Length: 448
Image (cartoon, rainbow, N blue to C red; front, side):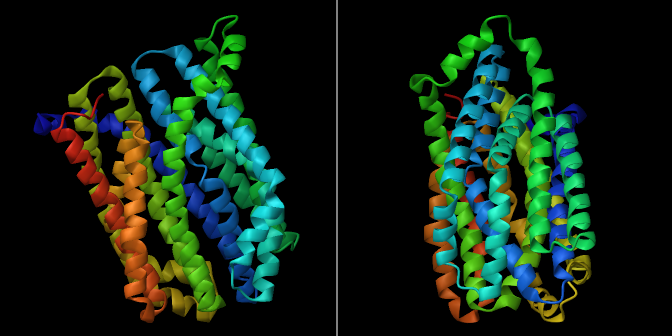
């Protein structure tokens, strides 16, 4: 059965109808990060770059621990699409947007507390902390747009629509890159210019996204539906299953962000050049993440849709075909970083000390496409299945039993230990989810 599915071109086409547009658009996100780093990395001192790295880390941690807004929306909407429940599709959109606005308001009200706690634990130089705070104070005001954008992206993916998010992300990041150059190079706003460019881009994305979603959702509701769904969206009884799923994915995402935050904070203890070098290399990791996420998004939508249709055979086909393509892409990424990694580093920053440090740790980064492959795919599988508990448990295991012990074991090697731990964490994350999936498959519990 699997062999015939593999030889059927239309099955591969279904995957790439979602994966390829999302890969192309997602790659624009780390490219934006590269431009951020490049315009700052060519300033004369490394503390500008380190300041952006630390400030961006705090903002990213604040926003991306709430990425469950996208993940849960995608999985649940895909299942509703598979079951042809159009009212549920609209109800989920409104519930997600309501929760996103509440969370954004909370972030803005608590921004001083968030920055105070975050920067209290950061052990960087005075200038690094000054520019990190400057970046945070501007960028945090994009919270409403950033969180609503997660919801809109998740809804569009759950609707099996990848072209709209692709257009949205490419246009937005292109504007961000343009504003980076204008604000930093021409206006000479420095770190503040990078922050303002990102903030403006988030609100441009929100404006475009709301227009796209309105046009797509309009045919699904009749007169009177909006008022009824608006009331249902804020009822605790209706929100409870959504909140429980989001709780587990929140814990899962928090564990992931802990690894990135820990790497930045430990790098700060090793010096500005080390944390700047790690910041440069993290852009490689973003390229891996955002390109492989294209395949993860595809399997999320396909698995969710087949769950809604109660079609087990198609569910398994989509998973194993996605695994095949994930392996191919991971090999291509590994080869690309091996051949061009040094050249990319030299283009990102002209600071010689940062270049040398980044090149020194590049071999560990080259391994990550292979060690992270299973994790990306099975994240998508379990999101599509709306199984947040299994994702949470896998991530807790990978963080507490693998990541921190691996770092502690090799701590004497300095920054090498951080990259060893990151590879071990990525591998453990994928293998544990694969083991859980196989267990559910044997017990015939993939579709409940």
